Image 1: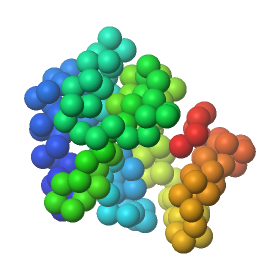
Image 2: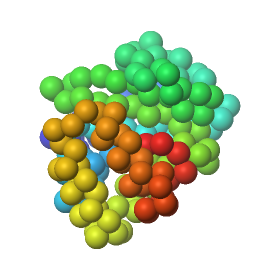
Image 3: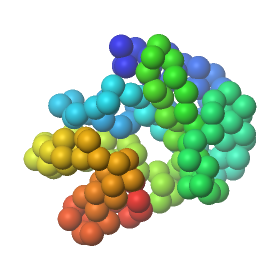
Length: 152
């Protein structure tokens, strides 16, 4: 159901933003990853298209985590078919343009995915901020994997 929803959303987004690269990212895009059964969509745009993309989507979806927005990253959220969807708008080749890279990295490195799944299980009952910090540390915040150069 999540993959079908992604394909529907992708068609809508491609009509709105024909030059954008629309990617299914997050755990639901990774075989064998533990997931909350949600959908994460990365909308990759050129720097000159970022503000318009954010403005248009901000009129359609709920703005999300505005405290971490900047001129290269924003996020919106919605619920469709009882599925939580996050839309991450990123400027192509910026330091925030890594969601699809993380997906590909985990697909290509099953042993790292296994450790990441274990981390998710360990933090499943804990506060979201605690989990976010542990996830950040895991993906480079403390050099353990050194994949990401920013908080996740």
